[in-house]
Image 1 (tube, rainbow, N blue to C red):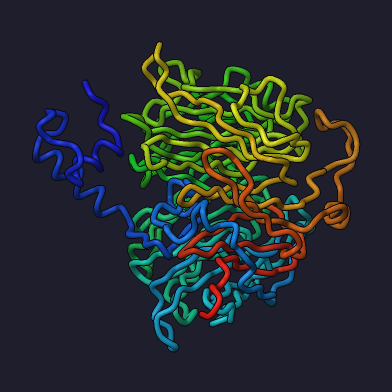
Image 2 (image 1 turned 90 degrees about the vertical axis):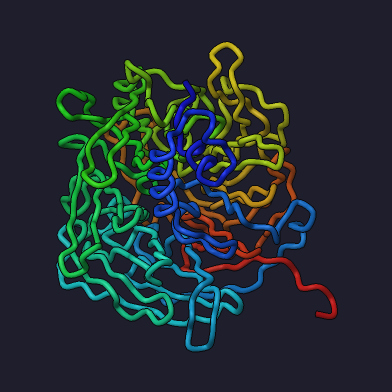
Length: 547
């Protein structure tokens, strides 16, 4: 029997797959279509409403047509604006989000939004770089713990845009969620307490009336897990949460929770006890229901105890959800440098330990810092229907990594690894085939993809966390903020051919500072990035002579 997946449902609903196959009965198909079309938020070519572009965190600007391999060499810095935000520890501005449906007092505009670590949200005109409005969040709760890079006591989560209500949602440092009008910054929702004050929460995601975030590291005394707020009744918003262990098992992939087209939430958990019978899901991939936040399934690597013991947690990444063939898939890695691809509809199969694909890509010395897979991978489907996966690597590629057909030189500091999704002839299931390795990137952030071009930010960050042994925490001295901010380099934007990894563009010294744990946004032919000095950058094509 054919698998009923989000991709096959969408094909059937859009007329690209016939109901006559017998997979869907008419009434069931109608119900499924209503669910899909009610859920799929319209995203135009000029929108980037959430971290990684969409709730699946694909990083794929699917409608982008302005930029291409043929013209991306003509990118230039269109504008740069320094925003009035004080960096706190390593963090300054969140990853940008973009909306082109904003009816401002000056007329319709495409607007870029970033939140600032010191409790601000800024709205910037995408055409000129002018600040249209800013909103400052007041907090009246005292900070209990020392501010440092592990617990910066700041606004940390990338906001999310709800186009249907013309609202941007953000969490202030005191844990209250605000909804602001896209055009004016006026308060439309809240503030309502969402998460504990000064917790370390990650990028917001949205499904209908539910908004989600994830928490890690116990900052502010908050328990790690996934938190959800139902905003259907603004007067009485309801908060739900799920914890994956009593201690540890933090969800700290910077993309926050991932929402699949199959209406499930996917997260990767950090170091912590693993005893599913007792409700402990440390060092695991976990699938959670949307509204009541119940564990539906999980995958645990067979060496989960080793991962936890040596602090190689897979919680360093947010999973990316995508469809290939008749399969819904999730893929992610971790500090140990191992890449996992799983069947999103059956994580780990019956024994919860069987991935579709597993490979060691980085971190041969098994260090808990500065090496491995960090952030979020990106996906793309080319014009021939082949699905691609792009994985950000810190440090050199493993000597055990599968050999790519194209390499672009040594990569001591980091790189992007590209894979094609193919069908295994023996198992008839999806697997990955290595395609190319990029040139050296100085600690890459999660890549984004558009129209045959992969964009990657070389962050220039100093990723060293401690002085002492590099394999396991054992009396090491944790570096201070000042020490972490030393030995950094300016960030650079790279554009690579999505099929070969060939360098098409490099921004050089256009960006003046480094950046920590950020992300790119791409909308309407322009690429947006931030740095630690609270600068927002816009890259676009050079104007033709005479225009």
